[in-house]
Length: 177
Image (cartoon, rainbow, N blue to C red; front, side):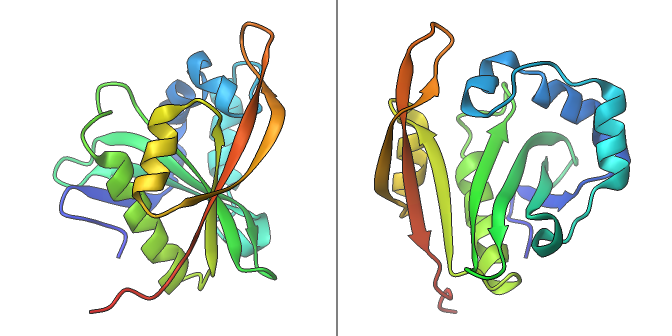
């Protein structure tokens, strides 16, 4: 269920701390999150050691995206703001440089949707996308997500300006056999 012909989504392990160190400290990606400072390996090791993988308890689920054949980590996918009451969550996805443009993000979204629907029984998933981030907008639109709203001047950019944040959502339905 958590694998395609090319990818595998697996649980976070303490040994992933060094990989997360590289991902979390990609300063160019900080603009898409609330990160404002580098994280230490110690903080990330502690996080991996104490990680609560129950998304309904912790409100999040973090999975490592690996190539199925050689187990090489290629990215991270998160479900966050997981609501057991409303049966919804947001998706966050990061594909490492060198692995982008290969369809890994699309496959990951398909896998996490299947898991969210069939295992977590979520009704809906969403994505928060910086206005003007054309690749991310296309990624989610092409996967059937619809833009439902725009929060104007919601995100600050590195040059001190503000841009909107688009909210995309998709209702999950059981896939026909």
